[in-house]
Amino acid sequence: YHAKQRGNHYLFFNDSMNEQAVKRLQIENLMRFGLKEDHFVVYYQPKMDIKTGRLVGMEALVRFITPKKGIISPGIFIPIAEETGQIIEIGEVVLDKACKDVKRWIDQGLFDGRVAVNLSAKQFSLPDLTTRIDIILQKNQLPSYFLELEITEGTIMDDPQEAISIMRSLSARGIHLAIDDFGTGYSSLAYLKQFPLNTLKVDKAFVDDMSSERGRNMVDSIVTIAHNLDLHVVAEGVEKAEQLSALEQLNCQTIQGYFYSKPLCAADFTSFLRAQKQRESHSQPKLK
Ligand code: C2E
Ligand code: MG
Ligand code: MG
Ligand code: MG
Image 1 (spheres, rainbow, N blue to C red):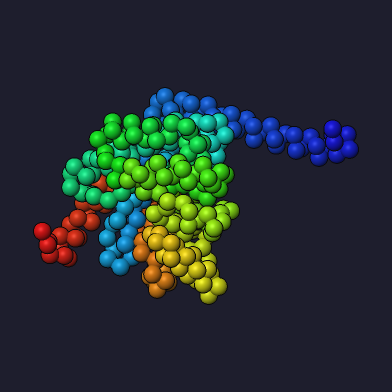
Image 2 (cartoon, rainbow, N blue to C red; image 1 turned 30 degrees about the vertical axis):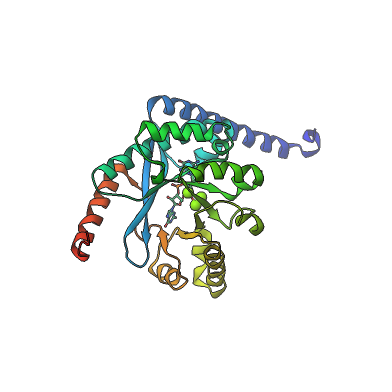
């Protein structure tokens, strides 16, 4: 309707919109094919205890490896998969593979913590979510104790009352729940204490800001609030030694970031676990 008034401007806008729509459609088709052909792979990023330097867990992160276009970043395909609903199937593939890998690492005596898997808003609001998760855990013979689910503020603030009841049923199974990218979304402190959460993940944006005093005060406040609510704190996207020591001073227990390791494919993560085990058996006398 503004076509005549805006002239070329409208045309330009229209073209770029078309281009975007075409790209989205291409990725949607690639994902449909990729789901059939098993092109979704899970990488793992260690979560380390700041004080002991020990591995305490890991986050499963999906990678979309296409034969023709190479690796497509989650930042590009996840939002599209959210819109098309494909995230439901992708999320289940990730959960299934993560359970399988972790079960193997546990059986090999290489790991006995939790694997954190991201849960999208679409998955979270599935009426049979808990059944779907139970089935995948059972299929892989993995007790729910080994699972943590990461959800964002947006996911739970959409319908907080409903979210509380879904989270309670997950929590009742022994599944841990983490709030991801904390501080970037719109969540109310009043609700934060009502959610059955175990972990709060401080978003990378806050960690990046820690070179200034104001930035450090911000993280200090977040960590204090989390601890007052009995939440375990994980700082995301830690890249530098200075960030690490600043976080240690603020009593943040766990960090995840390139400083320790980028996300690794399952084979490389196995090597990481073996190296960790080696280090531990040298440094610490066995108590049992
Ligand atoms: P997220 O859940 O907050 O995951 C952390 C992201 O930060 C990952 O990006 C990780 O590779 C990146 N990261 C970790 N440490 C550093 C660091 O030191 N420096 C920098 N620059 N980046 C770091 P990734 O793997 O690209 O994933 C991006 C987002 O995509 C995730 O953010 C999550 O929201 C989403 N995602 C990834 N896998 C899944 C999945 O299986 N399901 C769903 N629903 N979402 C997923
Ligand atoms: Mg996450
Ligand atoms: Mg995050
Ligand atoms: Mg994120």
